[in-house]
Amino acid sequence: MRSLPLLVAGAVGVSTLALVGTDLRSTSRRATVNVDVDVRCPANGSVTVTVDPWRAVLNRGDDIQWTLRGNASSDSLEITSKTGRWPFTQQPPRRGTKANAARAADMAPGASGRYRYNIKLWCVQGNDTNVVVVDPDIDVGDE
Image 1 (tube, one colour):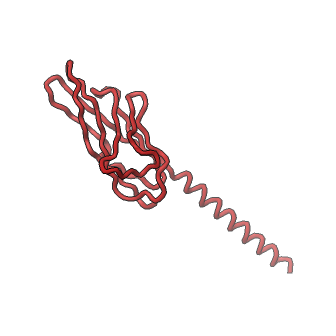
Image 2 (cartoon, one colour):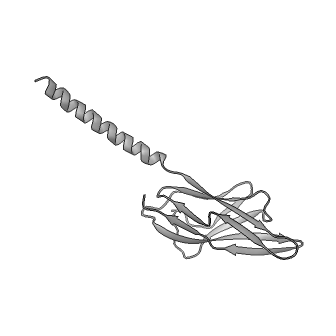
């Protein structure tokens, strides 16, 4: 008779541990996806922009940051939504500099699918400053 109450108590203890373990795993899976941005603006007027990755793939709950390379020809960047859809609770614009990356966090509940956005850079070429705009994507998975 004693083994029955111990067996039930043991099963409850294992179930509780399994639930706690699941909660801890989902919290630890959150990540920050970095997008590396570079722009080169030589005096001859040509412009080269690199965005890596071009299509940032995030899981639900992830954050994203856009890091402007230290040797880029622009001192700052601005992130805006191209279509008005945005996977985070705080709407753009998000601004960043070489010293402080632009960042988006706190993903909106139910965010899923492809989000098109613009990166705006100010390209200094001699005495002129030109605006350069590129339009990469964010994909949010169902995890």
